[in-house]
Length: 194
Image (tube, rainbow, N blue to C red; front, side, top):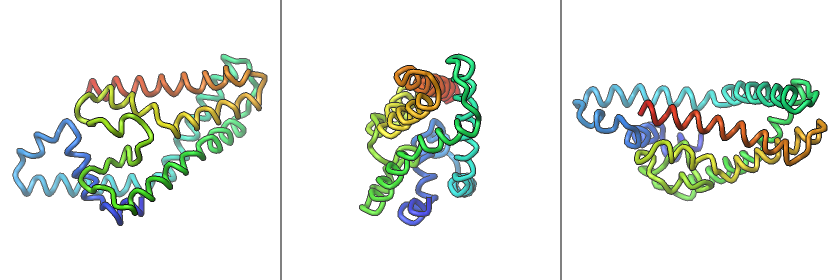
């Protein structure tokens, strides 16, 4: 986030987010002073969320670990304690650091400031090549096919398989199925409320 702030700036990130949102037309119709106020609020919110991502990620890891632990213990007959499930989720998400590193490299290499999408900074999924404003549902689902997300799913599936009597392929399918369910619900809600 520090690199994004220095190379792009949160004001430009907010402008890009507004331009790709369903409220872009409404924003353009506002008087200049109201546009400036809304942009300033958006910049403040983006900055706060961006710099609190480490804490937000820990909360997300705890939720994912609880859901996966419950699913494996109840549906697959595993006996995985919460601490071990949390460790599997955290270690399983480490390939995402490579994605973050690639994002920083692309920022230092001089990415287009007006075209930068903070939600999809590197071309690791088909959604990177799509217009986010065109078909929200399809864009959201295409972002699920991210190389690093698939890698995370496989590593988590292997971790749960190694710590239970569940077959490796079954464990990967369970993790992938829950992730796709999450993306499907998120895409449906995003398309419904846009």
